[in-house]
Length: 335
Image (cartoon, rainbow, N blue to C red; front, side, top):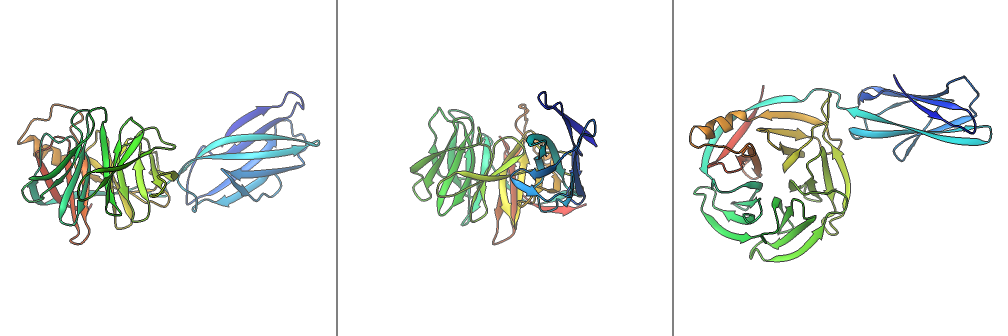
């Protein structure tokens, strides 16, 4: 157990809030409050975030399996001598098990524009849709899967660094990196219909949807859930394994009830539970970059795996990378 000390100069009470620093979510969390010199405490009210927790005197024990993983603030409001003090401490809820490890099998290989700095990828109604990044090189495009031929393209203003895309309610939604705005396009004409501002996160990285909400990453361990009408970031999860958080979440895809996420500058995919943030699987795709290096040079350290698309009707998973000349249909295989 670790301790936090709060010194009240007026009362000369010194309260200690006892909690673990981190705990797996299949364990019971015990919280207690004490006074350093055993001075009497009248009562205490514990809470985790905004949720009040029942206590037995100065101690509370509860199951935390229904909480989201990640950073939580445990608070105790201590009542004594007709006074009260608030003591808080951060506790990290971790996954209960290690993620399963996946490898892959290449099913098909398709051409991909090696000039495309891929930030977002989507398969929709038989076509690939792609969003790219870098100022002056950002666009959205519609692509024929088999040939890689560009069928339609819309360039962004040169002041924007394009990021992830997703198709929702027959509209293309695209993020920008540091401009703080997203853009909504007509799916058929690619004409811009509206812009929206980020409300809580500072940056735009990956974009997806679960059929009801928009899902957005911002380069941290968080995946935000946006209201598709107001674009307000209403809630979030944090990606955690049983040992640590996973930051730099990038391109996203929602597949069969789970979130698939690229990690910036790594050739891997995380499989994340959207309810609590648990990293349930990790797919090591580093071998795909080795395949690409047989045919082309990738001198930029950022030219890594980035781009996940899923054909739901035919259960096909596609991946590519920034400036990669190939797009791969793969099957993930549990080790």
